[in-house]
Structures are given as C-alpha cells and as structure tokens.
Length: 124
Image 1 (cartoon, rainbow, N blue to C red):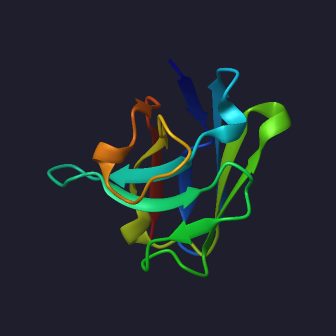
Image 2: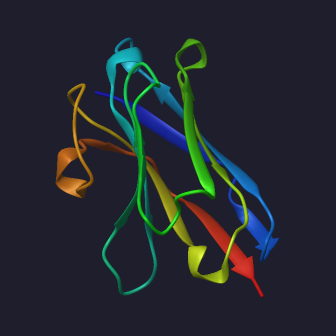
Image 3: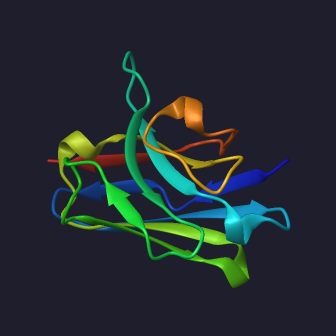
C-alpha cells in the first residue's frame, strides 16, 4: 500500500503560479505511474496530468497544456505539478494519485492510491 501526502495549494491571482508537491511512501515509488486530478463542487474528478515511472513519459489534459508541468524526483519519493499562468477556471481541489501498476491512463478507476487533496483558488 502507498501513502500520498500533498502540499502547496493556496490562493493566487490570475496569471500567477503555484507548485504542488506529493510525497509518497513505499519502496516501489520509482516504478509507480503518478498522476494529478482536480475536482470542483458538484463535478466529477477530472484528469490533469500523469507521469511515467522514469519521468520521461508525460501527458496533459488539453485544458492545461503549455501551462502546467509534471515532474518527479524518485530519490525524494515526490511528484510535482508546476502550475503557471493560472486561470480562475483552474480553481479546484487537486489530488495526487498513484497506480498500482507501472502503467495507466486518464481515468480515476486506474489509480489505486490517492492523497487528501489540496485547495487551489485563483482569483480574478
């Protein structure tokens, strides 16, 4: 079993930046597919980005391409989401997720482990 702990959320103005962090426990972290999702009240959890175990394979939702960057530091058992040029529509609770395997896609059902969520609010 993997434990995920998120941090870095907060309140920023439109056009600003935030970096989210997700610290993972477990000896298999280096082989886990990691992802970020987000959710607003009354809506389903939405895929944001994912990254392969080696860090070389990344994928982004169309809504964040060119603005968000996912990365990981396996030595620190941590995955990051750098968010630039933030928009009010980026406001959501952001969740870190890990697959039970070394592969996966963009659906919540493909991820077995989840963080507690961290609030990101972008004001206009």
